[in-house]
Image 1 (spheres, one colour):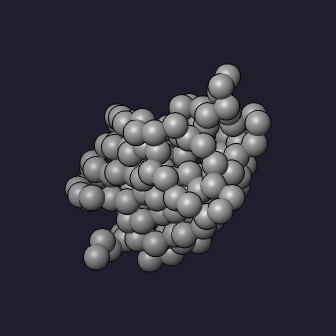
Image 2 (spheres, rainbow, N blue to C red):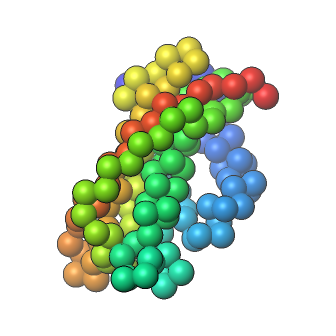
Length: 144
């Protein structure tokens, strides 16, 4: 079990969400906030799709980056933030469905670097889940 350095990490994240303008713009919302583990969802609208109707790769990578970044952020000290140092997305299947679930987790926490991964899952109207992408990132803690 990963231990947060900030005992009020949940409230800190909720407060930080007020300034997540792009996240709100695309309609992504966090649904689970736990130490080193963040989940969120997005209802797919036409604006999220690319030219042949699949979920746009940019949306996929954005939601992966968000949940991995917040997973790392849940572990840092109150006077730190996290920024993405690197990001890799493996697109496994077309994003088809009506909802996207993103599950991010820290797989190794260091003093400065946090190694994370994310699963991006599409859910159709019948509730069938399809893993469409997996993300990997290194998040860097910075003093604020």
